[in-house]
Length: 556
Image (cartoon, rainbow, N blue to C red; front, side, top):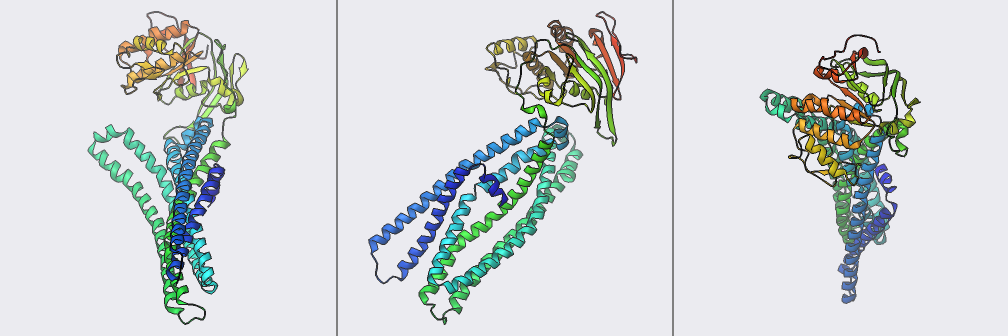
């Protein structure tokens, strides 16, 4: 029930209204059975009054149930929105390295599966209130008929509740195990979608993926769910059996009891049968609350991880980037991480680098040399373990890192392309964007209106050009491009290196390009070579026909 109290705190007014109307509906339902039983055994009655009373209670029950369900449905959807927004804010505030460690499948499972389960349990609250008040009203009526028999009924019901609770506790373990398998399933589904071309092209790969990767995880999840739900079903069946046994006992064993009349016996039998529906429904809802409890535990664990490492600068107000922030310096900067396939930590640095305003710098090196990691350090997405990053002589601390990032426009090698120019809306935005689309020969593929692209379903090279358009429109002092030209044909590669980079440089931008294109090294003011996390070469170059190379030499 901790999940109920967790969600109640988010929508108190709606919950109170839903609970009150649910109780009214439940008590009204119990009143109907009392009215029916009384009318069946009455010798004389006011027929018209009874009809009016029955109709009035019936309408009250239906209206209160409708109001309760609609109110809680709206509150549930609001709670889902708020919870997803809260998690999204925490994810944005978390360090990139932590998010990479958590992995996209786990985060997606938290944002979708877990929140959905929580909302499902949330929307069961009014029905739970109806059922509880329904049963409570019936018990009150049974006590009015015979308090002696009521004691027996209460004892049997308590026995059923105890047995059911013991069963559900055992069911929580497989439910938690199934939820852990969900994270793995999300990862496999991501592989299925992203790798569909590779799967289609290789028959044995397809069979291996389905049989050796996807099926075992799906089967493990199925087994755990079946194990948990079987316990719930058996416990619910046992509770129903207890009620039937109780009805049989009252019908066949209490005829000779003093003060127990046939009217009381029939009233008890009818009422207990009437109680079966809400009791069965309530027992059927308990697995959802158990799953919600597991989901809440996963969400709270994620919140804890995200909060403990939240970036201190995330709550600062955004400030506009200066037109020319001055030079950027890395002083003895180091960063450690574990590379794929390597058990030992890889150390980048210590690095001592200076980037001047209006400078064009190429960073090159072999795969795994630390180039992309250096790029993430430069733009403030990674924090150095030691050393300092300074801009215009001012050290960038954690409290200032958010505003520091606003100085950079970046196209990553694994970039993501949004369908609209989020956060860039200005009066002349569409016109400026059309100019760049024309220069990059995308105007025949993509149009723009109100900052929204007509499509982003393009080839990889075209998508990178569209990402370059977005970066240009950001108009920031620093530009970082990570292997931008890798997917471009010679025409656009030439345009990028000889025209667009030169244009940014002429506008006073500091441009840092991570690249392997040695044919264009001579265009850079400097070429820095990284190997195994260390600077092996840095050479000043001059424009001319001779291609500069990155030699093994000390930083100039």
